[in-house]
Length: 291
Ligand code: SF4
Image: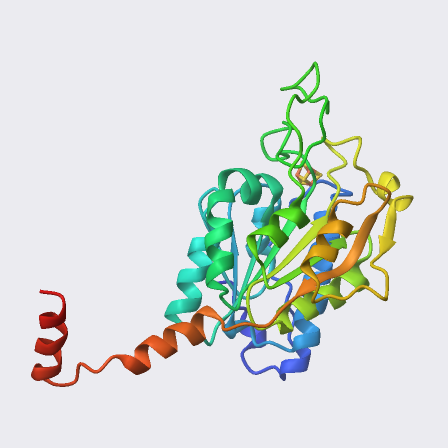
């Protein structure tokens, strides 16, 4: 799917409009509007050419987002956005690959892909729009819904404990972990730029309320419970980051953790540099080693 508009063909890069001409179909008041607005702003801050940019998503309300962005897009199958993205990055490392999707897509159906994407450390950004509900299927509890959360599918309350997305990413070893809020689009755009600038797998969990089906985790609810990560926090300390992730007093926004290690693309380039199969003798030598 390509929505690259003719209007951007000769436009100076700073004038590129990242909005596609596809109508945004989310419900009025959906938190995902704030994420989309922050994404537009962050792309503008980076000045990326849409032809170098691919947006990948899975399935869910938030996963419609590739349609709304003037770039290349891949609306994948449920939970498979990460393997698609890693494949894209490996096959064309020049591409900027940004993955967006919901908490159900990322932490339930696609959860098994997360640790493996993380340990390969591809230079991609994964943004979760976390509303603690399955919105597209009309309101069932999701992996981040709280215990005893009441939905049509759990009328006596959710009997499962929620996943902690920040701890999830930190424990699996993501090299950049941050948290934002869709009600603060400017702060969110700054956070996205930090994630884009990180060389490696960057993860941003965004609290993004669903006013239609989740009447608990609302904008008003978060308004009293948001805090900024303490300035003195050492972002190279994964254990301290975990402590913040488990604090129940507030939801802490900002960068929790960051480290620098070789990316998947660099690791592959290292392997390629060792491969010498230009002549028939070199191929025979390699085959002989494994026969
Ligand atoms: Fe947004 Fe919820 Fe509507 Fe889906 S159902 S578009 S998440 S408000």
